[in-house]
Length: 146
Image (cartoon, rainbow, N blue to C red; front, side):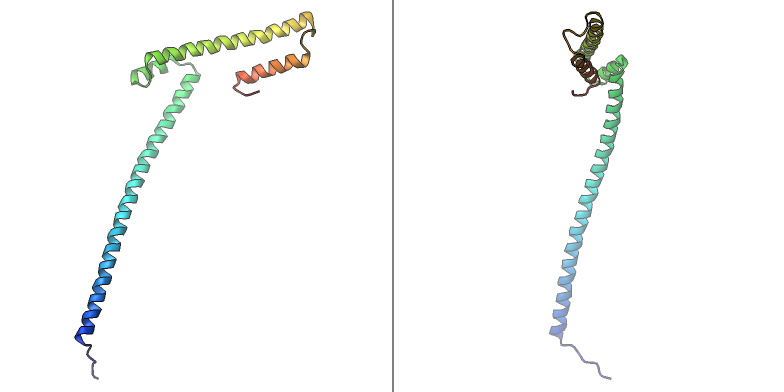
């Protein structure tokens, strides 16, 4: 059996083609590594951001509950943490007092309207009109649009 010899210039061309292909693969590999690092960095940042957002959601939920309950301790804690200044805390207190005052006044108006209907009858307002006012007031107290 005789082995056929490949001419040297053909072998050199094949080696050069292989080296070019190897270089392209190295460049592609480097580009893919860079993309993986970029995506890992983004994922890491996203993970940190997600955890921060979750913590902020929990803090806001607690804050909302405290405000709903009118918790004065929460306001003081918020002032101490630097999240709110004393002026804002006072404004919140004044607004809450104003809302309470107006709510009581609205409730008193409905009670007075009921008593007036009992005493003088339905001469000025029809029953339907008064019922609509009462329903709108109760919806407004619950934060609903009427």
